[in-house]
Image 1 (spheres, rainbow, N blue to C red):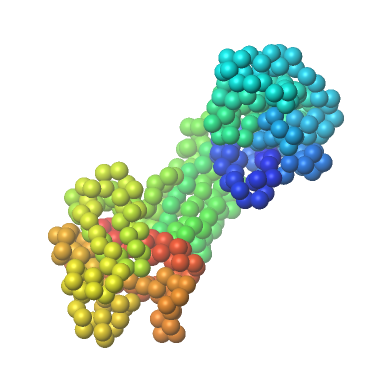
Image 2 (cartoon, one colour):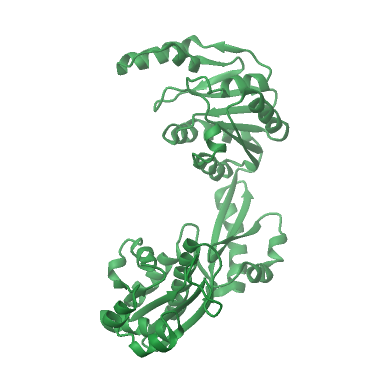
Length: 411
């Protein structure tokens, strides 16, 4: 079965609101056997909304709309659905009575525009909304269905889970019962190399394997369609085994696992501790590590050593090192990692120094040049990086590379 999502609202087109609702629905639909091939966003214009819905109905079994069910003049989803399905818009007297009772119980004034929410296409039935005033709708005509959901997530999510998912599961009938996905997270290996090692596995139809480049890492989505969750998971497990044989330790986690979480688990397993000395990353590595619950068992502390004075006074970076090589250099990164390890009494020390931009670069030391060092009981390793992107992206890539290096030491 094919579903298409249509998000309604000019504020979405203008970028004033991020459409998290459609992402949530897209993630849940495979559970009941529905694939999403298209998602559309349309503003508060009846003609364009009608055209958008007609296009969606021409290529999907079920169309799910988000938003535009409120009481104001720019809430046009009911009218758009009625127009796209060539159905009259009628007043539902039961809905009218429910709305009046809701407002009476709450003691709110009931203006006439509220009753716009009591109208529905003649072929539609309402969905209850205990968390708001706008009821949802399920409109069926022929072999097509349009489901209208309110925009606020606090209203949409319960309505979708309680009423829409059961409806869709029943409607799917003899189609495959579930579509299950698993994300394999890869670090320290670029997208092209990952694809080269598994390109034959990416040719399969079921399960499918698709790579996604993220900032500083690669995600592999393995998706299987099967009559049951157990069967789909077994199909995924076979492909995952083959991928792991080819990528090895580059796979650091699955699904929602984060790199900092994976690093913390390795530190805990070894009973090891870490401390961080950050210049260009400005505390970002420490922040990421402290996002992991229980991080205090392994993270001792850190220093944001932005100035040369702090590098010398707290981390014992030799003045002659800074004078001869500069703050952004391999010897300085090495001295920072070793200095923080000694200062904090940690098993591992991380040092970062670089030029995050957008200014401060030179032909010899351009923006994006970052040195990262990891000091450990077995010695100190330093890597030079030349990152691209904006200041925030360079900082994030540097923090990612530092965690990758620490993970390699722990492994």
